[in-house]
Every structure is written in C-alpha cells, then in structure tokens.
Amino acid sequence: MALTKKELILIDDNIKMAENSVKFMQGCAQIATDPQIKGLCQQMAKEHQDGIQMLMKHINSASMH
Image 1: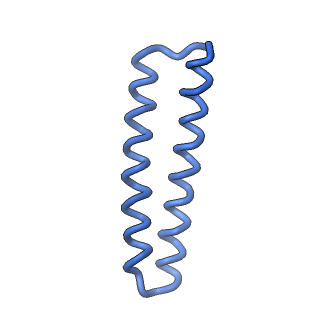
Image 2 (image 1 turned 135 degrees about the vertical axis):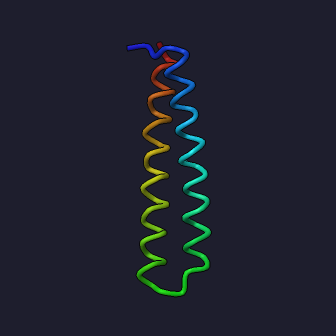
C-alpha cells in the first residue's frame, strides 16, 4: 500500500523526533552515575533507535511502490 505525501511527512517528522530522543537519552546515559539510571537511559535510547528503523522500513517500502 502506497503512503500519501502527508503520511510520509508525518513519518519523517516522527523519525526526527525519535533521533532527538536517542541523542538526549545517550547524553543522559553518559552523565548518569547510578548504574540503574544509566542502563534505563541506554535501554530507552535503543528502543527509540529501534523505532526509527521501523519507520525507515515504512518509508523504504513506500518508495519501492
């Protein structure tokens, strides 16, 4: 199913927000001294990165149609 231009723009916006969240969580992990907080920040960064990959798959599949 092809995505509309508006849908692609919304996905792109979500990717940008997720990239900002990854950077923020990575920064928090770097400065965190508590191992649990550091681990949580790293986990959250990975989850956002996984979300970016999923959104990129939608864009890539839409560009193939």
